[in-house]
Amino acid sequence: MASLRIRIVGGSIGGLAAAALLQQDGHDVRIYERSAGGLAGRGAGLVSQRELFALLRAVGCEHVARIGVVAFERIYFDRDGGIAESHATPQTQISWDHLYRTLRAKVPDHGYVLGRAVRTVTQGPQGARLLFSDGGEEEADLVIGADGLGSVVRPVVTGGPASNSYAGYVAWRGLFPEDRLPAEAALLRDRFAFYTMPRSHALGYLVPGPGGETTPGQRRYNWVWYRPVPAAALEATLTDLEGRPHPHSLAPGQVRAQAAAALRADAARLLPPPFAAVVVAEPEPFIQAIFDYEAPVMATGHVALLGDAAFVARPHTAMGVAKAAGDAMALRRHLAEAPSVTDALAQYSHERCAAGSAITAYGRRLGAALE
Image (tube, rainbow, N blue to C red; front, top):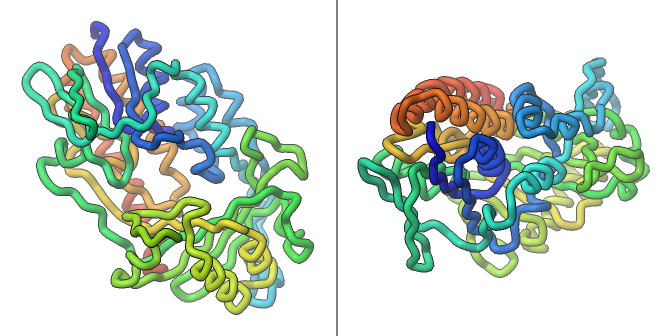
């Protein structure tokens, strides 16, 4: 297919993956990211998956997927902090930050526009148009919505309002330098640890440092604690320290002091001592509400969805980034092989809707005990 004018809404890993691949094929690609400060530091750890390896190989950065921290066994705590079960199942965790920076470096600065929000997208027989919040407009042959749970592109593709369905629980998270790991949590090093209780569970593991550091002492500890929150209490839970409610999550530094104090008190009361210690050691816990969403189609005309804009996979699957990488590679392939943009997008939607449905169903099964 001839060179296309492609515009991507959303500059996280999915949008960067699509941009890195499509510019290799000679397309004119630009990303619009609504955040003014960029997304570095927003993520934690990732489990390497086949699709991610394939993506990094395609953009010449396969080594990044091999820069990780190996958890040599999985352990399951009892309430008192003893190891109730252990399994020798080595697993490698890589750094979201390092992956983000690697892909960001593949996109030239003029192709990554920060702080310019897209209000909506319209389209006609020959192409699509981005309408910006600042009143500007831009034409494109193809618009890709890689703008996550709150996608403004999603309704254009699906034909109407398409809200996420709250699953009834949230993930509290922490991520801090390894040298702050408390002595009572020392047995967490080099292990993937779990603790399960009714309608709740905690897990944790080491990940590389923000620059991909894997030397002991330079890594970071990543923990997650899934906890039920009634729908009626969700807005209050996602209200930041300035009193502003957020729709899906609170970033580090946004959680109110009293909410963080209550979390630490609950950890001391409910979690085994090693996990309670790492929750207390995190100065800026952050929170992610868990949602479900499945798009009936992933593309229409000259507009496509990618990643969480189309299918929201619960984090238990550890496949959110891999799913976005798979979407980006499939979109590239169909654009290269099909006779037109609309044909390519129809084939892309058919292929990736099946994959997205399977992954989201798997996530719901894994999270069913928490609902």
